[in-house]
Image (cartoon, rainbow, N blue to C red; front, side, top):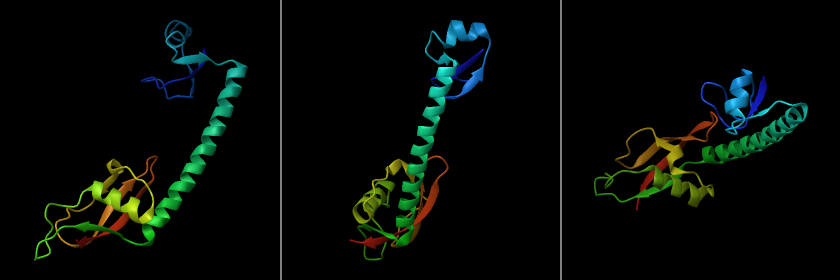
Length: 148
């Protein structure tokens, strides 16, 4: 029996996938638990429309991500840090500080959990950070640590 999965099911497939399973498994478990619906012609048509809408949204989101990546690579983001007389930073620069600097200087809100700093930042200078936008979209950006 063919069913359309409504939710991700372990060892079977992800949401909006068309899978073939045994009749008993579909009728006794997947459909009553609302994990799947039967693959009727009307349900298949709805799935097709849903996938088209999802593809359009993903294309728009990818265009927006590419725009953000372009802006981030234009110039280095400046991050302020308190320093001693020798140029060493008190503490270190964190992803939260980078996220705030991007928001203030570039106008984009990026979750700090998506930012990972390549090297440990303990002195003034230029460093690199990696930003993961999801779906395999990862970019590297430069940021400059300046004294406050």
